[in-house]
Image (cartoon, helix red, strand yellow):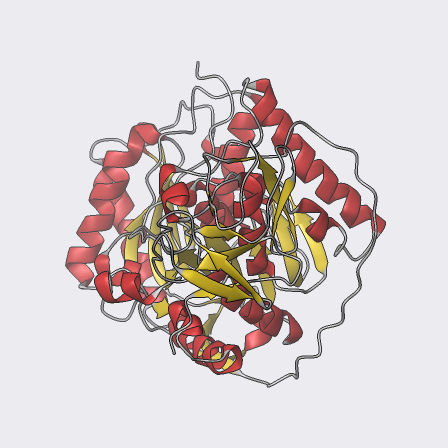
Amino acid sequence: MEQKFLKINPVDSVVVCLQPMKKGEVIAVDGKEITLLQDTPAGHKVLLEDKAEGEDIIKYGYPIGHAREALKVGTWVNENNLKTNLAGTLEYTYNPVNEKLTIPVENKTFKGYVRKNGDVGVRNEIWVVPTVGCVNGIAEKVAETLKAETKLEGIDGVHCWKHNFGCSQLSEDHEATRKILRDIVLHPNAGGVLVVSLGCENNQPDEFMAMLGDYDKDRVKLVVTQQVQGDETEVCMEALRAMYELAKQDKRVDVPVSKLRVGLKCGGSDGLSGITANPLVGEFSDWLVAQGGTSILTEVPEMFGAETILMNRCENTQLFEQTVKLINDFKEYFLSHGEPVGENPSPGNKAGGISTLEDKALGCTQKSGRAPVSGVLGYGDRLEVNGLNLLSAPGNDLVAATALASAGCHLVLFTTGRGTPFGTFVPTMKISTNSTLFNKKGNWIDFNAGQLVEGVDMLTLRNQFIDKIIAVASGESAQNEINGYQEISIFKNGVTL
């Protein structure tokens, strides 16, 4: 018989409907019969016990808010009768949880490109990166010209990563833009990068190139268009053609999976996100960490309500304190703009069964599995340690995915219950929480985690998922690449001059 509902944790005061259920329907939970008081959509919650006004409601074993009013057993629990417990910044106590991963090392490999500095890429592309939005048109024009000339023979792609920044910004806001652009230029998925500058922008070209450190000058070149006599596009093309001749000689070789760096993201979430896709990604993340690889969890506002779980998994006190700062700094960002820290679920989230930010966060953070937190990164920082890392970035899908790629991720795993087609500047694999979405939007979705509530066990599906990720890392196109949906977005947090 097909499973109709799920109680996630033994202490939960709700079950989640796995399919639409009707008013008057009776379900048996822990030996008790519950009569539904309303029609309840799939992904939504049904109350298992009476709750007084103000009393906490438990899901995933933790409070997801409190009852706005007295609620009867069998009630459909949603944003109209459930209110967040979140408020401002908090003081936290470190209570370390040191769970050891007991996952065997499998010595798997993928086919990657080994760069001159020893870094590894999963794509071999030519990129054009504007230092300022003023030269977006030039950058896009020369990228399209190279694409037409080469027909991508011997390489995986040619892209222009347009943005609107690089000037009219100040202080930390400007520096964040420079860091993200630096990270893109240095990313190993590029076999060659042309940096295109105007010349008079705040993001001064010589200073920007100095930020790159010791880079391969045959593979990264700069054109300052204001300094070019006549047609700057031909100067750009000369540099691009030279880099193309080098890049097309690069070949994939076997690389240990320990070199793989993967970003973890969700969007368009629903009530099944924390039951299927996010736990599946968490299982993969733990497997990758056990192999010596790296995963990164971000979208800090979607940690609110589940942050103590991550804090207590930090390997040491220093990382705990960095995580506290990560959380409270983002809360201060909300409060400084007069916005409440708990108002995050989108209309689509709520329609899918996510009623509060705690509800969202407790499902969202499952993408991180159970591994200890080994590193904490600021926005624009680059990876320094293997293992599970936390990264400062907002919940916005494209901004967060760009930040993950900029930190050094080779690809991004993006779970979704409602679907989204976008991709950032690295392969952005979509994992559906339910089979309905997978069957409806197969042109967007790369893998279906909805099978977990249809009889497929987690270990079997995890192993299939591993194989799929390794295939994409080895050159198989993700759906966003097939569709040509690839772009960047930089976090704007400051005045515009």
